[in-house]
Image (cartoon, rainbow, N blue to C red; front, side):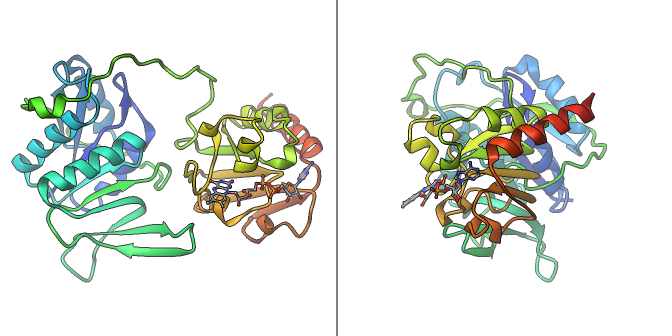
Length: 323
Ligand code: FAD
């Protein structure tokens, strides 16, 4: 069976959920091998985790020599691994870093690249190469595409698949990458972890509760419902531009793209630029005072009402059920 490489998304060895989603998709294309680039000592624990989602092999690339640099060394390490293993495809999480690694890798190996896929299938009628689904032009078109040159490199948005367990051997193979001096030209001088909010990362969260201009700057009801549901907080550009919440919370064309299982919008009208960042959410719920707000065109459930009343009441019910 052909090998499919999956780049593990992790924070200090802690494997993140999108990795399991990618492994689930990779099994449609061939035999998944995971790639761990990080502290060698954390490789075995990561391998154990990814084996539960079907990784037969886990390449561990010790980053002792490269972790102080930006993404170029990672792309170079991955290039060497692709050249060694000749995989059928490389799947990479659609994070800021993942997309940069993917772009650099594509250039290095002369391959086609598809970013921000929301689904990946093997081409049944053809040669089994990956066929992707993407939502493009602010979500106005759904495109199916495939790479026609080189090894397909595909970045996949978080929450595009439900992780399914499957026993894999998880055999660890250490891979010593040689990183050139030119890949080490940008060095990390200092890095500071984001202030922990206790909430999941916005682009990875299975549940997102977002607030817009209709919050009037009061995000407590949005945060209250997000916390009751164990979700992340998001915002429209109007809320960000009003200075009520930082840009890192913005969802949409010029913000982040989310694709959670549940998206709850409060006081958001549903402008096309906002939709571009959330319309692939599995279930969409909106609360809006205006029953003609465009957001109601795309919801699964809509509530015509004041978010300052509806969100706290919903949060209370959820908390009651949790006991
Ligand atoms: P509004 O459109 O003002 O809607 C507020 C809504 O709240 C209304 O529907 C109102 O009925 C409702 N409301 C008011 N009070 C309440 C209440 N108490 N309870 C319930 N409902 C209430 N926008 C983004 O979001 N993300 C982007 O990335 C983005 N990128 C853009 C890029 C470009 C190039 C441009 C031109 C625009 C972009 N925009 C983006 C802006 C976008 O066009 C909209 O202006 C913006 O999304 C509107 O935000 P909003 O829905 O919060 O505000």
